[in-house]
Image 1 (cartoon, rainbow, N blue to C red):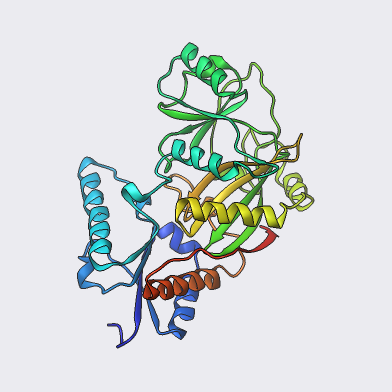
Image 2 (cartoon, rainbow, N blue to C red):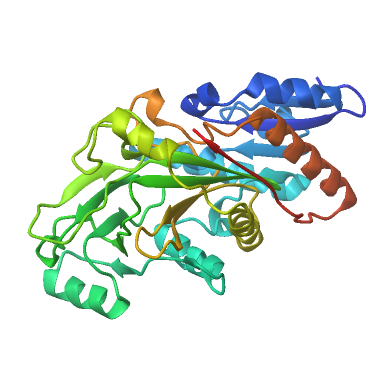
Length: 350
């Protein structure tokens, strides 16, 4: 039971994410400000577990294995939405229609908005492919300016199983509908821009090696797996030690641009827990925005080991940042407004 005057922040996270986040650290910091941090049982009514002031969650990572499971999950999600609306509870992050990152096409359009007007920042050309028709898809990509090689991504934002396509002949071999995006050569370095409220940090990770179009077979991959230091996949090239040295010597993103990207993403999504994947074009040096996720690090692929679920891993003082955000949300909730502030930013190597 909460003590008189005590605020209550509830959370529900999948087991894999709980193992990666310092929840005890968050709880200790919040306790100093008379805020309880309590895990939510999704199988029990929320009204009997509260009253909550804020709920932080990754409910959209719940995967149904049967039709019955799907109905139960929909009931849980609807229950959370209804509870938060009725009792004016701040939900981190949005569910349902309020989720502007609900599918990859929406993500790509949002990234294009974020990069628009930013000097030296761009979003690679992309297009929606709706069926496995080579001739139709070739024409769609041509009109959208998508070049080969290109990455095919499932329209469903929760799926991280993708494919690299090197020539038009393979445009009928993926699962449709999907989004195709031009692959940008970036010297095998991925810059993860992590956003927790007004805090922005950049963590470097290994990535896919530089590629060229040609008569090569389509390569399937999981986005989490190819960005691990010890990854083993045809698309990532050199051995782990070489990739690590390359990352150690990589040029960091400009702090001010990373912070501006973070600020724009917060403003356009209304979300405070985000991760943006940025690559540096090996030819122009411009920054390409290739993906964005809310509350990163809760991949839904259960066939991957826990080590593949990196999320905010590498972000220093994550517990402090998370607690600071929650306290700020509580303060602004009491004041009846949520105001996006300026970014504080750092850069480090994972």
